[in-house]
Every structure is written in C-alpha cells, then in structure tokens.
Length: 285
Length: 312
Image (cartoon, rainbow over all chains, first blue to last red):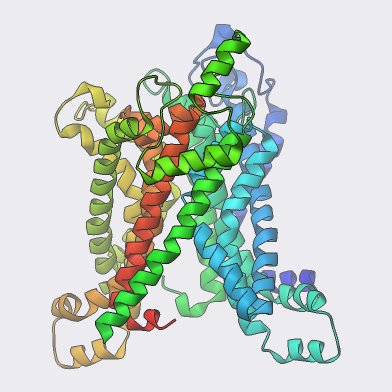
C-alpha cells in the first residue's frame, strides 16, 4: 500500500466525525482568509502612517482591526501574523515528523540493544527543559528564520519517535513484514516502503497535536521578542505588542490573542477528535 | 525484600541522572563558547591591552578544556562564577536572590492546579456524559488552548485595570494579593491538563472489576471514589508531574515578564539579551537540575507505588 493510498483511506475513515469536519473547515477558512484577505485591503503590513496611530477598529476606511502604535494597519498585519504562525508551525512539525518517524522506525525495527540505546537517549532528552536551550540558541546565533523551524522541530520530535517506535514494534511481527523479509527485501526498504505507510494513521493524529505545540513555542518566542523580527510579524509578537498598549488600545491585544487561541483550539479539538476516531477504546466524550 | 528492590531501583535512577546532568553542562558550556561575539564587546573598541587584561581576569585566554575544567570544578563547589554584566555579583548570588519568587509562584500554581484539577476531573468522571462533564471537558480544552501570555494580560486588563480589585504589577503592593493574578495565570493551563488526565484515568478505574464489586456491595459513589478509586486513578498523574514542572518554569518566564516580578524567568531573559554568558549558563543549569531532580523523584515514587516498574 502506498503512502497516498493509506492517506486516502484514512480520509474516508475520518470523514464521519462532526468535530473533525467542523475544526478542519474552520482552519481551512482561516488559512484562506489569511492568504486572500490582504488583497482586499489598500494597505500592506509595513505601511506606517503616523497620522492614524492607535485607531480603533471601524468598518469604514477598511480599518477592520484598527491600527497599531506606528499607524500600521492591523487587519493586514494580523493576517500576515496568521500566515507566518501557520507556516512556522507546519514546517516545524514537518521537521519533527521526519526526524521522529525515521528515528522511531529505525529503533523499533532494529530492536534489542540499538533500540535500548536510542530510546534511552530520547528519555534523557525528554527530561531537559528544552525551551531554555531554544532561547539560548535564538539569542546567541542571532534571530534566524530557519533556526526557528529547526529549533522547534528539534524539540518536538521526541513524542513522535516514541509513538512510531511503539507501533513499529508491533508491526514488524506481522505477516506482510515477515514475507518481505523472507523474499530478501532490505531493512531500509522494509522500514520505508512497508512499515511507514502503515504508521500513517497514528502519525496523522500526532501531527495535528504537534502543530499547536509548535504554534505555542513560536508565539512564546515571539512574545519574548526572540522570534520573528519586525516589520515581519507573527501572532505571538502581535500579542506582545498588544500587551504594551492594553489600557489605551485593547483591540491590539484582543484581536490577535483571540485568533491565536481559536487556531490553537481548532487544532487541539481536531487532534482529539482524530484520536477518538482511530482508537475507539479511548473514546470518552 | 521488596523495600530493598525499591531502594536499588532508586539508586540506579539516581546514578543515571548524573550523565544527563553532565551532558547538559557540557552542551550549555559549548553553546556559550560557540556563540559569536563576547560579553565584553562594546560599541567602542577597547584597547587591546585592556581586552587582554579582562580576558585574563576571567580566564578567557586559557584553552577550552582548561576553561571547562575550571568551570566544572567551580560547579562542584557550588560556585557558578562571576556575572559578566553585574560586576561584583556572583551568579549564585543573583540566582539565589531571584529564585525565591519563582519558586513560590511555581509551588502555589502547582498546588492549586492539583487541587482544582483533581476535583474537577473526578466530578466529570463520576458524572460522565452529563452536562457538568461536558462543561468541564470543554473548559479544560479551552484552558489547554489558551497560552499563558494571552491569559495573563487579559486578566490584568479585567481584574486590575477595569475592576481595580487586584494590584496590576508586583511593585504596586506588598500584600499577598499581588500573588493572585500571577498564580492563576500560571496555574490555569496546568489545571486543564490535570483535569483531563484525572478524568480519563478515573473513568478507566471506575470501569474496572474491583469497583464493580464495591458497587455490588452497595457502597455509595462517594465512598467508592474516596476509599477505592481515587488512589489508583492518581498514579498516571504522577508521571505528568515532571513535564508539569518544566511547563511551570517556562510559563513563569512569561508571567514574570508581564507582571514585573523580579524572579528567575525575568533574570534569564534579561541576561540572555545582555549576553551575560555565565549568568545564562548558571540559570540553565539550575533549571535543568531542578527538572531532572523532579523527574527523578517522580520515577522513584513510581517505583515504590508500582512494583512492576522496578523489574524492568
């Protein structure tokens, strides 16, 4: 079974759940608005006009979300922030996905001593307060856009590795793997052509749960002023900027904060819903 | 016999924590040395003799292994070195001064998270699928999804600025009231996690055979929960305590920033931005030690509670 066929089957299997459908559509709508929305505004994310500083949201003059302390249009900036936040989260999740799946599948398939050593390393790394190392990285090596992806991905692969390894352990005893081994398929090929496609369902669930974590880390870094650099922006740095103007211009905080919370909630409910669908034993609601 | 097994388990775990800690120290030290730019880089170029003098005073002219040996030797004696940016202060003094507030906030937040979370989780599990259960699970999911740096400023705005019930910043008040908002902001996500975990494990325990027996004996739900179900349901929660400590430490960085609390988190961010390398390194090692020690305690407690784990 190819990876794509596995994903297709998975999609059909999951289509039935209400939570999954609602949250997925909400996320798709948000992403579409973030991509298309700025086209309908006469402003760009870095146009600053000091005559219209701290303008509250209005429906006319297309200042839907008002302006910030530098007179930049918050509607465009917020959508920009959504784009960057989602992009960082998705790329970071892909990084952790690749590392986690490869690492976990190799450990699980190899078994024995190799497995023990590899998983011991994961346990060790698990015990570290990683976020502080990420902060160190960002401070010491200047704020590099690429580094954000790598740092977040490097933090998040541990869970994925553990889960993939557990699944691989049980998969490698199955007949089709046995058969592949008997006709002389190489271990690498078995891992990537026969075992990985069968891990898809579990992996998809954990990907949807990793994305909100990556969003959290990115916005946490941006909030501390260590993430995305001005004039670029992300939801975290918009919130950070809003905190400084809570009394005079609460919309600067409320709007990006609620969008951020809404996106995170969608991903969390989606991940939860997917998990319930795939594992009826844990279905609790 | 059983006690000895548990003791040996505790000892092996303790020994395995040592290489982890060593790894962290080496990693942090290397990172600090690999970072471009030194702590004494100024806007104006300083004369080479002065630079050489400063480097000699802080032993920066020695070879890397020697520097590490010197630093590590100091660590073993509890000496984290001098701060580069706060002349006259040692790193240990600065950490010691800031630690108090962070530890108080963290402990209060964890305690309230445990009490509220377990309470809500048990209620939801016992009244499974009721309106109460739906509300609790929905709220918990919301709590998990809203980051601390969103909750904290919103609370500040509502309770301190609009309503004026609580002090807005740490310096505004000497009373215990100044703890309320930071602790709530720090505790809320943890309350949500604890609630979800308690509910899940409680539901599982309530479905097990020995609870059915207890029900058949005609015990009330309250008695069953208190006398039989609560304790086994708490075991999975124990393993969450390690990550929870790490999460509270991280959250406290944000909370201290927002409320202006002179704690360890604020010190960390400021020293990182100032490139005060020894101080940053000292705080990372302090945090890591804290997390590792806590994970160790959890592991050991687990080993005592559940004999199956010791045998692995």
